[in-house]
Length: 531
Image 1 (cartoon, rainbow, N blue to C red):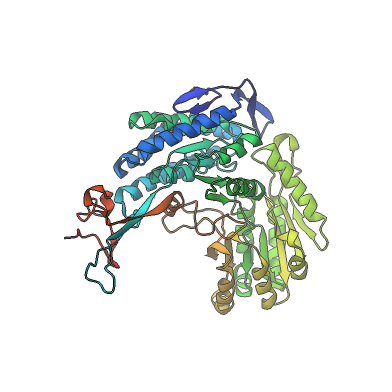
Image 2 (cartoon, rainbow, N blue to C red):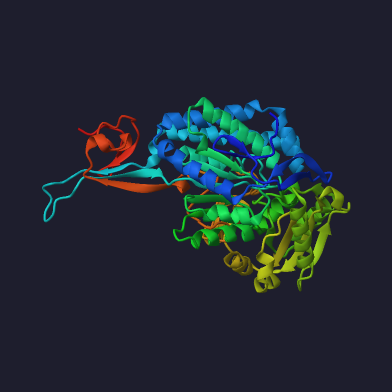
C-alpha cells in the first residue's frame, strides 16, 4: 500500500493543514518519507462526530458481525506482508523478527476477542425473575448485562507500534465491545499506523460497516492530543506510555464537564526479589535471566525489571559479579526515538547523582547518539538509602536497574511495603524459601497486577487470565487490564432492565436465551432457557 501522509477520517484521507512532520529512523537519524499532515481541531471534531454517528448503528450490530470485522482486520493486517514489518522497522529501529512476532500478537488479540464475543457469555447477563407474591413487597423482574460505552479514544504506544497501537489491544477490545474508535497515532511511527489503518478501513468496507467506526488522527502536537480527550463525544480513553503523559490525559478527562474513564497504563519498576535459597542454588542463572530481561528491546518494555532486592551474602556477591560481567558485555542498542533516549540519559544522570547510589556496571561499548543508542547500567544502593529516597522508586525507561542490598528479611519486607503500585513483582525462591516467600507475596499482592515466581516480567502472555495493570502509578485504574480478553470490560457499562417486555430485551436477556450463553438466573449459573 502507498502511504498518503494524512489522517484517515470517516473513510477518507484528510490533509486539512499544510503543516507537516516526519518520522525519523532512530538507527540512522534520517527522516522518512512521506511528510505527514498535522491534524487540525476541525479534523478532531469530524472524527469524533463520525464515531458518534457510527455508534448509533455499530452498537446494534450482532456479536457475529463484530467478530467478522475483527477477523477481517486480522486478515488484512496479515495481507500487508513485509511492507508493514519493514516500515515499522524503519520507524522504530526494532528488529524485524521482533516486529513479526508483535504482528502475530496483534492478530491473535483480534481473533481472541472475536471468539470471546461469538461465545457471548462475557456480557455477564444476570436475571432475577419477578416474585409477585413476595411479602411485604413484590419483587419486579430485573435483568442486567454489559453494554458498550460509546466512542473510545486510543493513543498509540511508542514501544509497541502494532500490539498497543492502531489495531492493538485497546482498539480490539473497544471494537469487540461495540464501541467505535478514534485512533491517535504515535508521531514516532505514523507510517506504520497508517498502513494498519488502511487495513482496518478495507475490513470495514468488506463487512459493510460505517466508515466512521474507526478513524486515524496524525499529529505531533500536544494540544491536539489534549483536545482529543476533551472532546465531549469521546466516552473513554485507552493509553499506554509515560506517567507524565498518562496523568495529564487523566487530569484532562477528569476536568471535563462530563468526566470520562481513562485507562492509562504508565509503566513501573517491576521489582525482582531474590530470596537466599534461590541465590544459593542458581544465582548465576538468575543473573543471566535478569540481564537478558533488563536489556531486551533496549529496556523499552513497561515490564522491564528496574529494581532487584536481596539480602547481603556471598551468594548475592556472586550474583552481582555475574550480572556485572553481563551488563559490561551488553551492546548498546537504538532506542525508539530521540526523545526517549534523551529522557533515559537524563534519568541515569540524575540517578548517578543521588546520595548513596553507586555504579556497579555499565556497557563497555559507548552508545552512539547519532544512532539513538543507549547502554545498560546497573547501580547498587543500601536498603536504608532506597527507603529514604523516593526518587529511587521512579521508573527510568530503558536498560538500567538498581540492586537494593538489605541486611535482613525484615528490611526486604520494608522495601516491598514502600514500593508504589506496579504492573509486576517477581519472587525467586527455592523450596527452603517458601515461608519467607509467602509473607513477601502477601505484601506484594497488594501492590501489583501480576505476581511472578522464578521468572522475569518481560513477556506478557495474551490469554483470558492475564492481568496487565496494577495500582497507581502503574495505571489509573487497578481494576482493569489492557492485555487479555478481560480488557473488554473497560469499554462497557452495566445496564439494568426492569419489567421490560420480552420483545424489547436484548437477546442475551430474553427468556429463550437464543444465543445459548451462560447467565446467572436467580443466583444460579445456567445456559437453560426460561419457561
